[in-house]
Amino acid sequence: MTADPAWLRQYTPDRSTAPAVEHHDALSMFRAAVARAPERAAIHYFDGTLSYAELDARSDALASALIADGVQHGDRVALLLQNVPAFVVGLIAAWKAGAIAVSLNPMNRERELRLLFEDCRPKLVITHPETFIEAVQPALAEQPTVQVLTTFARDDQTRNDARVLGALPAQAPPCPGTRALAEVIARHRGQRPPPVRFGADDIALLVYTSGTTGLPKGAMNRHGNVAFTAQVYRDWIGLSEADGVLGIAPLFHITGLIGHVALAFLLAAPLTLSYRFEPGVMLDALAERRPAFTIGAITALIALMNHRSAQRDALSSLKAIYSGGAPIAPAVVAAFEAKFGLYVRNAYGLTETTSPATLCPVHLRAPVDPAFGALSVGVPTYGTEIRIVDAETGAPVADGEAGEITIRGPQVVAGYWNRPEATTDAIRTGWLHTGDIGVLDGDGWLYLVDRKKDMINAAGYKVWPREVEDVLYTHPAVREAAVVGVPDAYRGETVKAVLSLKAGAEATSEAIIAHCRARMAAYKVPRLVEFMPELPKTVTGKILRRELRGNG
Ligand code: AMP
Image (cartoon, rainbow, N blue to C red; front, side, top):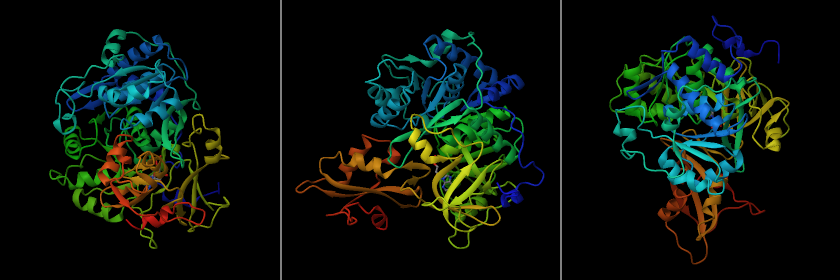
């Protein structure tokens, strides 16, 4: 590292440039909150509240049950849940049992889950009854020994807000072969698991990201990574004890895991959860719980801004609001500020950086690059180095020149579960090669220019064309398939399929979409389908995705 990187000049003047790390594992962080404020609210879920002591008692009971069921140190416990209290209980219980928590998107369908389960080989899965019936049960057909606990999203509250819970049945549907999480906790209440201690390098989480091949890779977020990035949020923003956190991002994503759950533990603060994002519900939660911080995808913030009941003072309890995961248009930041009087700050990171690598400082506004109009994603945060390198040769480029963003710091993961080659490819001598193309200016501000990879970013959800194409090719009428991201006013980008059909075969857009919908999470399903007699190709026969993107 150079003696004085330019980005340090942007740091908030009255704060340290490198605060001492307080905890080296995520479980200690939670235990410290319980010791400090046992009676304080840990989770608000509509009209329900769980205190830190109650979260501790439930996770003790569940961890005791897990151990009784044979869960051992390093085993995987998979959470396939929306933003419900049981997610947090399951996470802590997994750690108390010495296990690794695997956070999986509950939107995954059977085909996707089968791959994920084959990779992480969970001992136990905690999920919702409807997710079990639709996806988990068939996906586990070949792993009959995996135990399943189910938790109903109407538990732990009585408001039954129809805007988000309305689609669920009044009672949990029966799920043969599973046990109800609430009953398991009740049976083991009062039991305490044997003490467990983690080192900073022990794996806390497996969080799946899709690689260039579209096959899921489990990023191994260490306990030390989690404790570090939680503290980055707290100290960078200047949050203090009991500053409440609003859960806008999904908890299964790294943003929610760190910027909501881990941060709340560090602050010993209440975390407000609302099953899934719905702008009207979020606005009500803001009014009722008065949180001090949130972070979410820009599409979620746009939805808050455009909601008919959004008043100017709706966000007045927030000390700061950040957005990450997808590009932010400067015009959106301006419109948001005009509406709420609050400036949205950019955060850039990957699952592989355990959430933030760069953040906009709280006392500054991010510059906009004059050449291509992009809002800066901020400056490297505490203890973090960013180097822009030539994407082909790996040689550093000059300030202001575009190249691949590489990152080194205490937040970079240990690698990918079961994927030594992918690990050495992505992390070279401590530097994470992100696949993002960016520019670092002379003052230390980072701008994202493009993606090296062909990934589509639909409202922060990452879609790999190859995976969608593979599913399209399973349709009997499809001869050639190419999947591209096209601009979309709401989602930033959306998924488009361009197809040619086999001679004599027929298929409608609706039939193609229905075929995909049955086989993959909704966010990956093409919204647009176009048919062409022949797809454009290179001389070697490779389909030219780039050319198709222009057809938007
Ligand atoms: P994930 O692992 O799902 O968090 O996705 C990480 C990817 O999201 C990065 O490699 C970027 O391509 C993109 N990304 C993250 N933060 C931002 C941001 N602030 N602006 C634009 N793209 C972002």
